[in-house]
Amino acid sequence: MKLLTTTNRNGSAMEKKALLNAGAEYRRGWWREVIARRDTQNRVPNFDELEPTAPPLVENGPNSAYAVSWRIRVAASWAWRFLAIVAALGLILYGITKVSIVFIPLAIALLLTLLLEPMHLRLQKWHIPKTLSAIISLLVGVGLVVAMIWIATSQLAHGAPALLVKAGGGFDKALAWLSDGPLKLDQEQIEKYIHELTAQITAFATKYSSSIASSALSVTSSVASVVTTILISLFCLFFFLKDGRQIWIWLIRMLPVPAREPVHEAAIRGWTTLNGYIRAQAVVALVDSVFISIGAAVLGAGSMTIPLALLIFIGAFIPIVGAVTTGAIAVLILLLDKGFMAAVIMLIVILAVQQIESNVLHPMLMSSAVNLHPLAVLLGVTAGTFLAGIIGALLVVPVIAFFNTVVLYLTGHDSMPELSTRHDRIGGAPGTVHAQVAASYIGGSKKDTAKVMATQERSRQQSTAATASPAKDPTEKAGDTAVADGSATDSATPAGSEKS
Image 1 (tube, rainbow, N blue to C red):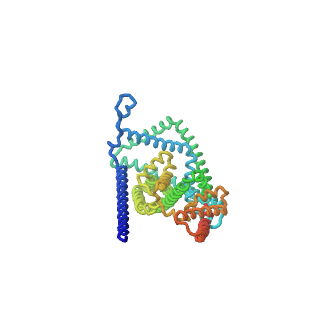
Image 2: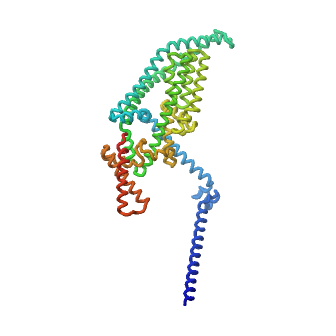
């Protein structure tokens, strides 16, 4: 009996082992089929395998499209989609040029907001009301600009007559060099050329007098448009300083709920990029203007030193083109005022400063703010100048830098991962955009905002804890909830009460 029991037991064990082996073999075979099928699906086929089988060709019939090669049809599909994208971009640019009276002041106000925002936030930390701090920041910024323009124009008006006299003397010296120098031109021939040039200028002015008059009218209208642009920019600047956060939350509120947080995070990174670009460019412009103006003062520029410094400071905000233009003006002024050798020395000083800027300052300051290739900058400045003149040249690089950062983030490439954990960043703490939107519906007071953001943060932490860990006993869960409530309230209240 005992032997029979042992035999049955061994037989059952053997049968069980055989069944297990059969099951394992079945699973192995099934996985082999799955892997083979996956390899077949993931394999990149050849063009000949992808090309569809064409039915019998009937000339001028319904199947005549198959007479065109499949590769040509794919190229045509790419071509018309590319043309559609180019047409859409062209329409957008055309629309921007048509509403430039609104778009340009808006862009200028945004850039000025970046410059004045640190002062505005500092005044708020000193417990100055938001409206009053915005007014003070605006007045200080406008006062600095007006003071620079007044100093430059007064110095220019003081030194321009003497510069014109020296320019006339330089012109006489040039004529004397043409007659007495290596060219040995006849004095009568030189005077004849000058007389012919004067006659051509007079004839041109007489022929196109109507065009000149219309140009004068267009200059008048341009002055009016400049005044309008300045007023709109100042108006927008005040409200960007005072209600910038509320305006942005109102824009975010119009988006679908799933798109709010990605767009908000992308905009924070774009704004940080703009902030870094403007501050770095201001430092570079200040260094350029200081050192080049010192060189001009040493060479004897006199009253033209301060206008040159301001001109170089403004021109430094236009990459590549601005430095070349302002440098040429500085060399020309020294050429007219002090002669050829002074102009050559001024050119050497400008080139030395530009080399230090390009090889030391620019990489050190711009590497963390903007990551744009010089070719993209040059093409962007050229296109911006063609579309919107000097204003386009000023604005195009910040716009390209902003959209570069935004598009990179939306496509999964975060160039600023440290912003995902900073609670003192621009735009509020991470994960609070939905609470800010909810608070904007209930009046936007500090108390209500803190309450809504604490509730949103508490529910988010509870849902995260419920999905990340298994269920605990009721007492432990209640304790964890209480801790989460306290931490959520502590962390959300500063973000909710953060000023815009």
